[in-house]
Length: 228
Image 1: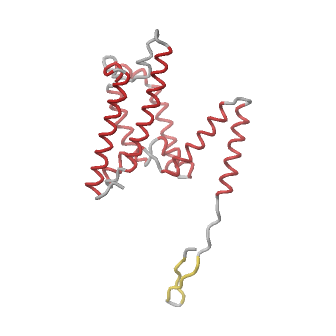
Image 2: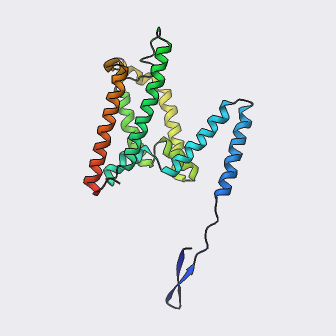
């Protein structure tokens, strides 16, 4: 039980602070109601409740871990900490293996169709402009897309405002996509399996991630004295 300092007759008196009531039962109840509501909206579908459950679990993990891409790029410059940066690198490594396996399995299953370049965006002016604007915006707003959604759930008013403009900017960008696509006419598309082969690509990707991880550890040791 914690204590509260108060002044009585000019002297500080420590009074025990009442313990906060546990909110876990309420959280469990709300989670059950959310899953039930998702099942109702599914209308007999077996997939939608599963997606709903994964979404709830993902949001809980984000909230508890404070996982945020903004912190991954901001903290090394401001505080020198790279703990979130390394967590993002691990997540990218795991995701890379998973996407590589799914993509490669799809190519093997459809040997006659060209699936290699599906979803590969060109590296052009729109990408550079969008990356800079989004980077500046997420630092000012204090959160990336996932971080903003997580903090909206926590009740942060600033993040609610950020979410409104995030959605507005997304609609605006989608509306002007044809205009920006003109700058990608001669922009190159890089797909590592086309350059190194499927197995070579995952090795190169893993090597890049390992080098970045080592650099992140060294950077924190330099700035903070340890990489814990």
